[in-house]
Amino acid sequence: MEEERNRNIKDEIADLSNELTYRRYIMNKEQMRTIFREMKLAEYVALHSISVIGGTSEIYGGRTYLNELAAKMQLTMRQTSKMVGELQDRGLLQWSHDGNGSEGTYVTITELGQELLERQETMLKNYYGRVIEKYGKENLILLLQMMKQLESVMSSELEGGQDQDEYDEFCR
Image (cartoon, rainbow, N blue to C red; front, side, top):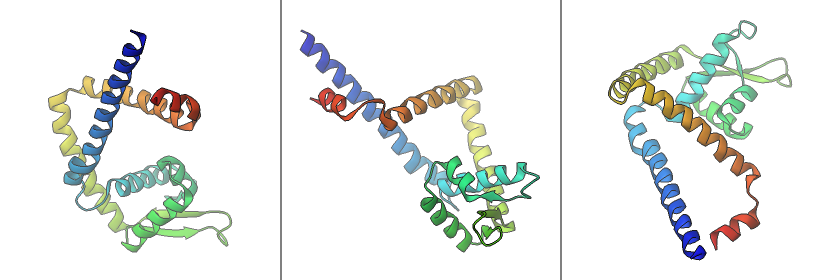
């Protein structure tokens, strides 16, 4: 009896985890491709983050240091540097450094980058405006709060909340 109950729980968990994985895949793959025609989602997040970080700091004059961007996007410095290099190659960012570079490297958005960012933000506002109208602002706020909670739990699990032996035992 106990063994059957455990098997049912494992089946439910498998079903839920598969559905969550599928929903994230579909949202990232198909739906976002329709909205992001001129840039990738990660590029938008980078440009938007650079705009917010650099725009709110009077001290840095529009500069966003790579370490800040990497932390915000939860990327390694290598991944961040690669993306910034690609955005620079497209003329969307300017990549510079303080002094000899040992004090840090930073990026600023070019005029072309700002124009692309604004076009993308307009598309997102139009799209999500219609979504919010149909889904409901309160529903969306609740969903976002719950997603943040879920992401927090998921992150803590990935960081070692469950050791490998427990995981292996659970999977048996």
